[in-house]
Length: 166
Image (cartoon, rainbow, N blue to C red; front, side):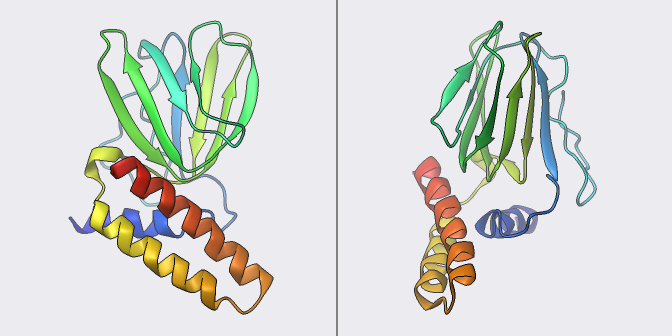
């Protein structure tokens, strides 16, 4: 209820501050940690750590890609979108991330750090649409380039969230 709406509000303001990432995935392929059920505000939620998975799909500024064992090393910037984790049995779990980074190391370990993250099925489409309308209004009313840029980031994050939920 209220916690999910608060998270959606933060997602609506995604990337507006430049603080350190507050949420993270810790994964290692083919291993990928159970969610911390009671995270403290501003703590790092670790969703996976040494849990075997088949694949992780990530949205990046250079395009979406899938990470499998023995993936070529890379460092990418996450864009707002859906991270999908495929278990070895084929089951998938989808998360919405607002921004962050993903690093694939030579040893097939992967670190995915996200500014904000939520299980996709816990987010509300109506709230996302409302946040998008508000961000579009703020962008239209922006009086300087800085305010316009911040509003544009909120628009992009909310557009991605609406698209993911539709």
